[in-house]
Figure: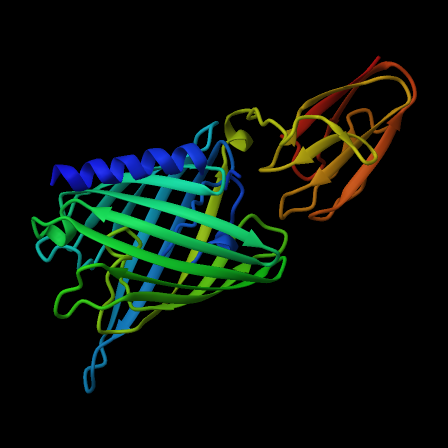
Length: 340
């Protein structure tokens, strides 16, 4: 028992040391049964609910729902902590209500997740490696379950998957995973999905078919006899809207963009919030959110108008001074330009 644990720990350390951050991934960057190293945006509370339905044989044709609810929070560094709660779980027959607490750390294209499954009384882990090739994202995972399915036996699983971006708001996804020592009645797990980002909102929606029941590591590693259809919906809460402005660091800092000093609009905040330029300098704002934003001077002297997702807007500051600005539809988004 100790040898597998040591091996898994070594693999975790190696992956963490060599594993670009998956910070801003949406549902369109992962598959139904693989996390893809997803973290979410800094300072964001995430609520996802996944429902999978199965229909019994005729004549009853009873519809059974197996939901999994996720609540997680992304810390200022690339770590998300969260909990999955699933009902109608088959992981441990004595516990139809399944809890999994976890932490996931992502760096350099890879991720490590460690957690505890209450129903199986198992310490579980997952290593994820991902690579993006144009519109395609490839994923590979290895999983360790210290007490797989409450069987007093360590179990191992491997899998892979891919997403294909068809559009900014549309993707296709599929995955496959299997326990390395499948037993009678246990099948390989698989899933397929049509992933949709809801335009001009932070939410994503997925229509899925799979033969797994829950979204925990144990639930997503073993296939069932029945094919289940369902959906997943994601609801991010940007806490800076309610508890003051969060501190966001722009990726790469406020460096020189093609049109001047770069500022991002991401996770409902400007990053950085304070920009310093010399007189005659140009500031370029880029919208990385799914929602339109504006860059509007507090005194009304200049206004970008709505900036669409992936859009940019530039403004040149000729005179020294301090220029406060905000987003008109989201007034909690504020910043300041200091011109020297």
